[in-house]
Amino acid sequence: MRLTLQDAKIVETDVFGDHRGFFTETYTKNKFEKAGINVDFTQDNQSLSVEPGVLRGLHFQRAPYAQTKLLRAVTGVIYDVIVDVRKSSPTYGKWEGFILSEYNHRQLLVPKGFAHGFVTLTPNVNVAYKVDGYYNPEADGGIAFDDPDLAINWPMPVEHLILSEKDKHHPQLKDADLNFVYGKD
Image (cartoon, rainbow, N blue to C red; front, side, top):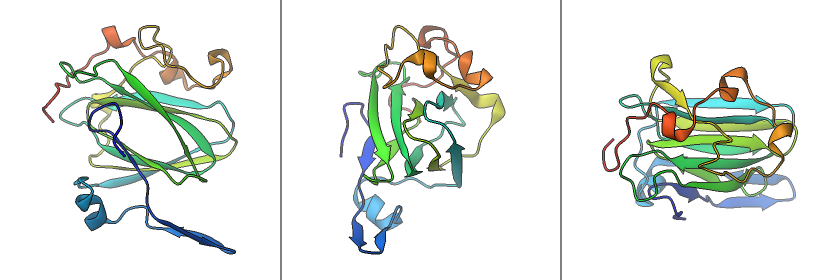
């Protein structure tokens, strides 16, 4: 499924369910390649957010340590947001949001050059994601979740959101230290 923001994709795998539950292949390299997703993933990550309203983001890693992510909600429901931060991109500074849940089994492919974040809509949310590069603390960056220029429509009042100290202090997009250029990795 193609999205408004170029290069990002929603991935829907076949889900086989019966009275016992369900089975799905969350990642099958040859099927992903056939769908035009050719990413060499190097690491799997998982986060647990205990309460509804936990907001994680908006994060990115600066080039040359930028990461492509493939993420999904294993348990619970999240509202996931991506922001195009690639200079010269026709969608620079634009955002899109998606519901990812244990019920819809959707995954989001977040390309390099996008800031990413999510807010939990249910308790005990487990988010699992693959990345194609290792974490580098010197390349770590973020933009403010409440940047008025982005005007992200979070699904709950921002005064009720639960953030880390780090995520409370990210700069606005116009002041962020970005080195992504559209059309280049």
